[in-house]
Image 1 (cartoon, rainbow, N blue to C red):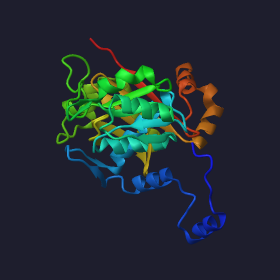
Image 2 (image 1 turned 90 degrees about the vertical axis):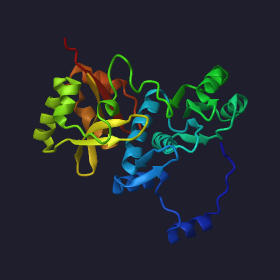
Image 3 (image 1 turned 45 degrees about the vertical axis):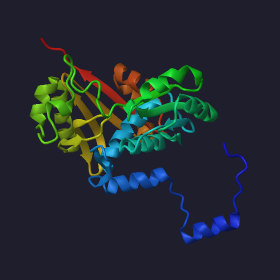
Length: 297
């Protein structure tokens, strides 16, 4: 941590007056830009991945929520070790959303380099690839995990050959059921999910907010496939991530919504109160996620 930073107050005043410096953080600028250019392409890599601002922001939000759930807090150090992949942008924005400190390291760092660098900064999380150009990054980080006392979380991007893309049994990912060129209807998704809550939610959102679901394809390798979003203007009220036999709903609450909800919390069901209480705060708000399962014979 830098403790002896010296700032020329006169120059600081001039920079603010001239508009060179503002009160905006990098996160403020990102969120404003992502909202304004949601459908514009933001990043492409030489592996064939192309992502829009909206896709990066959505995937980063989910990753950030997971990081918070696993114990990463503002100010914690998150180590990123990536090739020139578009997914680096997702990881970077996620770290920024958490309020954590990004610690990028070269992809040619070996286990000894990683152990030294991560212990030096007290890294609590590592995000990187499983395998790239003959290097097994997964085995490398796992081999030193116990030698980094501060390390809590390891997240790996399996880009070249995802291990769970098409399992022989169990739920099928959305991009396997419907490739990008085959956009499903809400009825198609409903028949695939086989959960009556999906239709009930659609009806309730229509009656309550007067909005129709938007079916969008995410090319993000962290959660690739078709999903459902309910939006009021540019604001996403709820996002549904669908799989065969189940779906997960995520609702993002800002500080204002959290304050309002807490006054009404006693009127909600016990299961919702439990979900709310065990969801850690995130930047003065909360990101609530719940999975709906439906078993049939």
